[in-house]
Length: 74
Image (cartoon, rainbow, N blue to C red; front, side):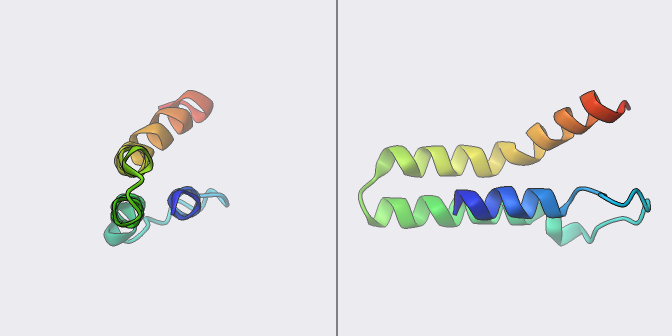
């Protein structure tokens, strides 16, 4: 599920610089995949991975925003 968080996060980036806005629901995909990964990890009694997956899913959008701002400017 962590891979799906990264893939969904990369899908949000405007790679062709078209300026076309992504649908609003796409911004919830990394969080949804992170929470889904934590649910799967809890069901397997891997509580550490559940915590990592949930935190990464929630923080992924913020990380992406900071990285893009640092690379391309505000």
